[in-house]
Length: 91
Length: 432
Image 1: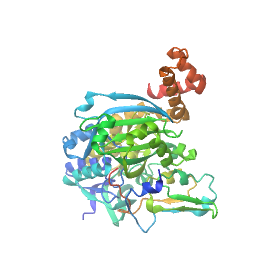
Image 2 (image 1 turned 90 degrees about the horizontal axis):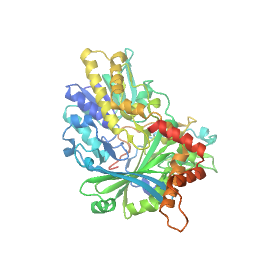
Image 3 (image 1 turned 135 degrees about the horizontal axis):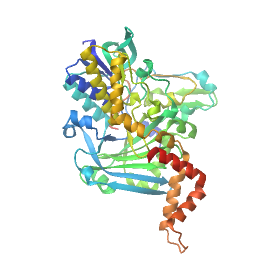
Image 4 (image 1 turned 30 degrees about the vertical axis):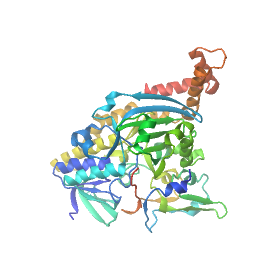
């Protein structure tokens, strides 16, 4: 099952204002980077070459898994502004 | 728009909307604040709306008007290994009559319907509003600020029904930081299948539904998987402990994929069309992880109050949420009658919770949380069970053992007697 295909099934109202901001300096020294694997929407990517953690907030399901597994305080995580973000139709 | 309300409810989920309905019926000026485009747009659960007496009482004809999928007739508990399944099926004609024991529903439809009921009775629903912060006045909580539509909403009482990550309860100082050890994450894939195909595959008639719980198909991560039948779709997903997921080195969708590829599951979902993918956290820390549920000017209900329990067999939250919403509303009505919104008056809410099935059930299964923090439960024991079944049924000319001897041998080989006794005591304390 391809996670990119899964994401296309879900609707989003994308806000140009991100609701997740990562402190890339903290992530550089993180010993687990559990967010990368734990996120059910695969929003996080670690680039070994540049030593940078990046986040794609646009396909975030707003579950909060990353926020809870991050024990380094590297995430500034909030719910998107009202009306934006994931918009479930069925589920 | 009036900006002063008797009660502001944050979150138009099941807890918030039923609270709003109760308050509106009492003639109070109530505002329901929802961050989604519509109620239910942010809601997700496995799929089962449990029978909830307060819902039946307040909306006796709800099952005729709400968009329901199927009533659950068949309950299956299946222990899985990579290539086998040992299952226990319970079919009961008592589940065929109203009040039905549970329905599969879609939350965007159900939550929207429930909020509309509150609106019809006079509640004001504000969608597209994320509650951002609390307004304090005279030492109590007296409203919220919102973002999306910007503004300030003031009230005598705030009910925080803003879900598992209740930033509102946190800002009120009622809870500490959210911990991975107290949380599960649920992910779900909705798969479309024709109604007749579902009925044939799951041996169902008319609007009968099946609820299958899988143990042992989570790649060794603490948790379980599920399959629910809807009218023309099935919901397949899993709930895993966040602490266990964090250290597993696995991605949740890969583990779900393993379940979908399992030989016994593959047959059930063959030809199905993926429709929607969703994820949500679940407060699984039990009674010990509950925040304080009231303070001056505020009460906390539903997932926001950590009102959810699982014992490995039952997983209940939505019924606890709706009941707590009504209890918070009853308390608010009393507080408004006497004109006192202090913690002392609102402590009545906690008393009502304690006296209800909510806290009683959470206390009954308080040891189940610890019981489920075990790799053996989710991997070794399903394998032991499958191996015993294999030895019972396999016909190969090897002389047989009696059942107890057979079981003891398998347990000794795979678990060790000492571990088995420790686990037995743990499970006994949690469930027996």
